[in-house]
Length: 222
Image 1: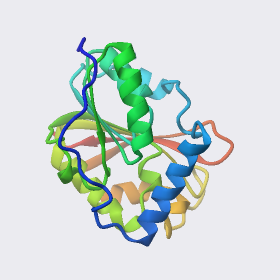
Image 2: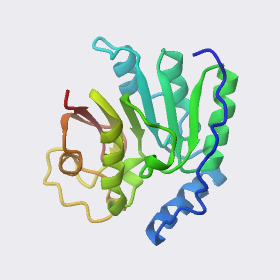
Image 3: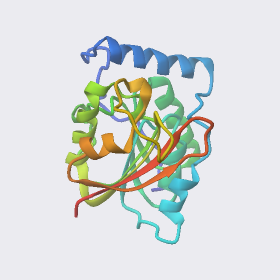
């Protein structure tokens, strides 16, 4: 894992990928964050929840990891530095370009791909993967594309794989949770249980943000 990242070819031409109006709206919103500067989810600091999974008392042994919505590559580079074979995907080309520069400067090999996390079949990420990491990607996916997201991960998951996901939700933990009727409402534990058959929801930990956020840990059946 000591070689700089390289551009993967061929890449999908996302302008030719059919997306509906809601998907285009999300894409424009994400692009606007990167044009304006650093997006709020791209802090440049690896969250302690991922650090615990990689370096903690019950750390996973290094294997193959796929990051969904990798942004400028902070967490993909962290995983690579800790012995993981990493592929990472982001919808925004500006973010992927920055991630490639950061990975090259760090001297680590990360397969950085410009693409859609709900259309993994269009990308060169066959799996299997032992770890999936998602920092606010799924909660921004339109509802009608979320089953495709879950199916893409499930198809690529090694037995016993883990999914560590951060997202915002409509209600604080312990309160009645309404059905998510729009992608803007975020994600709930009940939704993940329904959309990820063959996975077990192992843990839900509230985040420390001013709005309701959660860390979800799912485990693939062995």
